[in-house]
Length: 459
Image 1 (cartoon, one colour):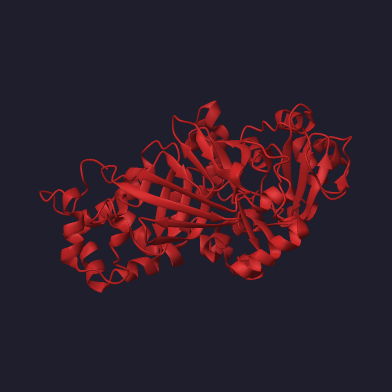
Image 2 (cartoon, rainbow, N blue to C red; image 1 turned 45 degrees about the horizontal axis):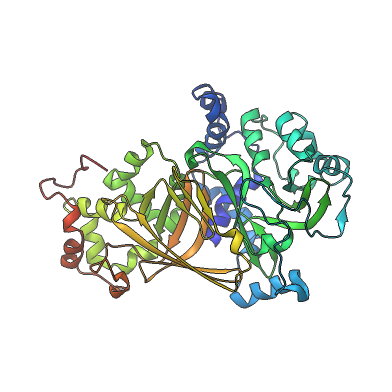
């Protein structure tokens, strides 16, 4: 978990810092109105060049946020739920559009049911900074005052704003608007529902996600509930007339694109990043218009598993075309698979959050990779809050749901290779080194032998 803690801790610590002069204005002026919010947010990330160098001091102080063992997480959940774990908690459940059914459902013991979310945070001495920001954004203020629909606000406390350096310019309104929308979820998400969710939809909708809602990642450990690896819930289930409020100790910043995540974490993804650069695939992908996507990102140790000879071949001039094919098999365009939600361009989305109370759950999906749409088989198994993701019957997703502006990063412990047995991919058990001959055999059908190391004509 440390790698994503690195990445998003920095966002929390310097959310309103301008990395380089003029970068926001340029991004906003060059976009259409519907993309201004997204562009301003990504411009902030584009100003960061070395993620781990920036984030290391922050990470040392956040070591306790790394998710603990299954037993520890079970203890944490039990502590939140008390003796009510097996009871029905459908009250307050909603879909991503906030259609709740019952207007209020079960809440905690705080707040004031006669006041709106906006009124409560404006009156509280702990959330005045966030309320002041909202004053400049009438549409968001209106949502927080609207009593016709429920919302859940993850509000940063005033102390979260104290982490922001005061010697930098205030970012543009479009960026702040994206930040504000990213703190607000449609519908009711009481503590129990948050605990059984791995991701939560927000009011921030992005063109790079096909117009779907950007999501928050939820993690549970002995040390509490973490949002996007760095924000900790410090108060929960504050009741309002039009929803719920949870207080968080950090500002939640919309995440960067998948490619930026890979770039900012060289200690984990330097080999993957080098492969994208060497083959030109990274540059080609950056030029494409994406509507969400899933990257099964192999770590440095995953490449090491292939063995020295295989790596030497892949990064040789002759092996580049095989490396490019290998990379394409780890990337899915326009389909975003989280552990508990699935966004598919043109066909809406499927959200598993309506099944969070199932004692057991299983779901299979075949995702079309960039490698001639060669299928990647994904099996998702759930027991209470715990979810395992197995790729092609044998590769484990070791870090789930690295939310990105253009999809999600699922970190894998083994490099994905097209299976020999498409109908039984689990039969390929190459957890150790792989020979160059076998690697070439597995990828031969996807490689143009007439090209020598250069970029393919297509993706």
